[in-house]
Image (tube, rainbow, N blue to C red; front, side):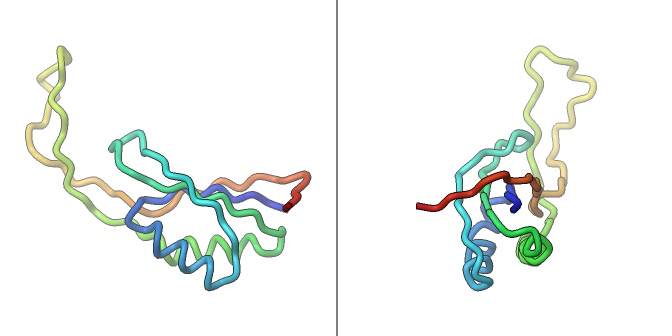
Length: 109
């Protein structure tokens, strides 16, 4: 048995949740915050049998797409102002980060 931990952008959360339900996979959703952009994200905990891992990963990949977003940089406080870029920068956001863990035991009550 495996535990998939998928961290996705909030914009993809509902679409992924619906797709997992349609594919008969159960998941636990946790609200989380990304470190780089301090943006909202959702972490899904998905327990599946070994033979279902590829199918779940495919559902995640089909519903969590990367996209470009303009981000206004924060001015440096006491840092080196020479490297500060005062205009918005385009960065890639979205997609999913998926961790796959082995599960020794799983019980549902």
